[in-house]
Length: 373
Image (cartoon, rainbow, N blue to C red; front, side):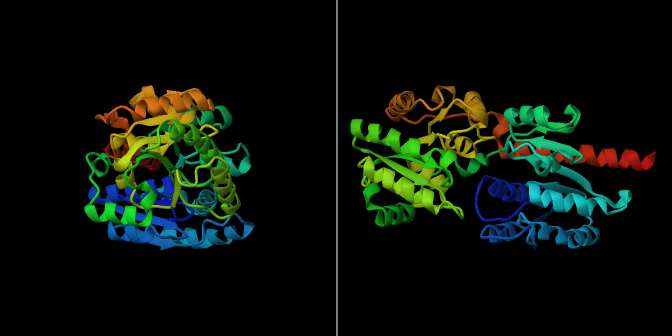
């Protein structure tokens, strides 16, 4: 099978990482894997794993992007993929219009994934117009059914899977540990409380600082670590976080690590992982990654992250936005030794890959039956 995934870019983030991981799984199963995006740092990893990257500026949310319809249509003619899988709205518009311009017998199967609960408007509706739609959680599925005219038989829930082998029983190298404590000496000898996620107000870093103020007051050996990149336009919020850290007296108790590519190492070193999004998150990849590493997670009981935690580690759930309850739960879990946490099969990368391939085959079979009529 020849598969083309389309997304804005390969900079950082859960969608991007998931795309690269799924591409690697396709290659392992002897499928041909192609990715169309504007490129980014993760392109090199994609290429090393045996996929092929095609670079076009499909990320620009501008009417000028529709000039790419012709080039993408020609790409589809030249590449002749069996399946095109769109993962974001602007690339989906370009791809769908290019796809419409092909003769029906030349069109590949068209699949989309709702990676989020997008605002309800005509721009977002393009994600519901694929031949089959994938939702990354049950709460996203319910959202799609509520707001878009997608027949239930054309909608599947496929949770984003974790490569458990990359996280379970992972032990950082001595070189990695030495480098971490050399660059951040304040972490040495501390129990780390990890807050992963890009720097964005709704991710809850302000609430995390409030919780860390109480946690470090009770236990001085705890140290907060915020891990995540700063996207364009978010530097002012990063400065707000730094000011709030100082106001709470946490300058020597909370460290910003920025964007990292060594999350398995960090999860393995953490005593606890916090998930504090202030609005329902569609899935919550950091939850499954941390649990796969055997690290307890505390999270607000909302959205896809809570859905995951309820299935894997329900004792980590707390009332949304209740900082006192969150802190108490975090302190209780921080005192417990790590233990094996078993992820249900549907949260593993292998299950996600097989379920997605099953969707592809279903749509391709529908194409074949249509051609036979």
